[in-house]
Image (tube, rainbow, N blue to C red):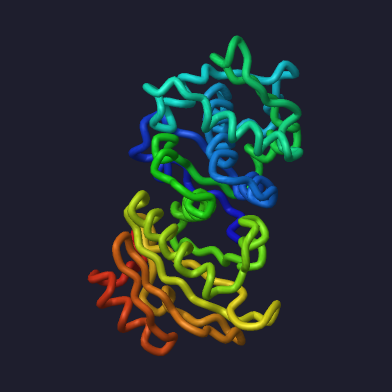
Length: 285
């Protein structure tokens, strides 16, 4: 995975300041390893956004978490989920129940007759908010993500999308374990494609997905994702390059509404047709 953070100014462009928050790859790795469901993952994002908005300097790596933890009015969290008028804290209650079964927080509970939510992250998770490669996110997108896999892919793409050649390899066994389901590619494929199409719509980008056999299990065990974004600079050769010594079973080209199946040999020509634009090459200075 990429270890160099993307340039913050361009990655954050276009996100209203009140919606903006930053999350790191190590933070996502730890959270996703705990097998949370949809409401648990949503609540993690809400808490991270609320926490980051109160930190005066995101680049200060010595930020200390208050011993008393933090709190937020439930109405604000419901509003972020598109439930502001309902007055029903059911989604938050489900998220609390999921998080309470993990070691991610020291505590989390309703307060003041369910009008407020109080929590304290475990210090290790709090520290990971400020550690490693990171991406910028818009909390108003949260209501548009309807499955745990949607949130996981949204996070992966958010981390890499500011890079000039955004790419990440996804271990299917790790994803299957996080989701509590089979990691067999044929079973994961429909939901993963839908999650990528949703991410493509939210981030206004397209993806090339290589289905690889690296030998950790029978068949496809890793998928390498390369993204074409407004900021990316890919040549067709680099975008479709096959990894040396790794069998690639198929190649998928994905945007917000389509998924086209190709091969390594045909990927370059198919990508030009599918994405309908000239190659993204580094700009001359």
